[in-house]
Length: 191
Image (cartoon, rainbow, N blue to C red):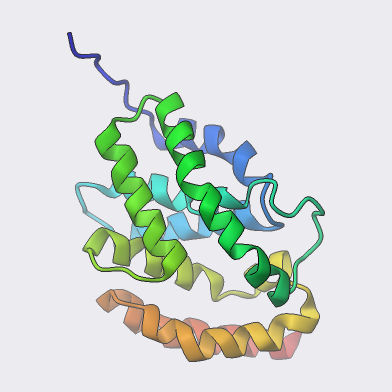
């Protein structure tokens, strides 16, 4: 006898995920919500949009309890802890999604998409949408203010300026990226 799996709506899913993401880096929860915003724009009208949204909410769950102090982080702290956080991702996601009655197929899809986010390597369209959404969501002053020490902003912007444009794969993402980066740079000048 097959179990009928109860589908979880976005609001319920969000409430279940939030406490896990709040145990991550400063600003991760607000960042995840911005990633969801972009997923809805880039993935509009897709049949699998609900899975992409779930991947967006979960993509930084690997950072849970990695940095116990809740201060804004430096670029150095980000890079020195990223491997550890990425190693946590698959087991955390798998357990979380099993506990919330997701199928093995859904779990594998979400893990694959988030792996693409962690490695910045997107090949399939669903991966490209979430990777682009993650990158686009960073291009706002709020992201910098919530997550990073101000002394590292210039370095982080230089990094994004040099690398992020090459990571963007969707047509809409490529159109949006230059304007978001320009606005972010202008906003930084005002702070």
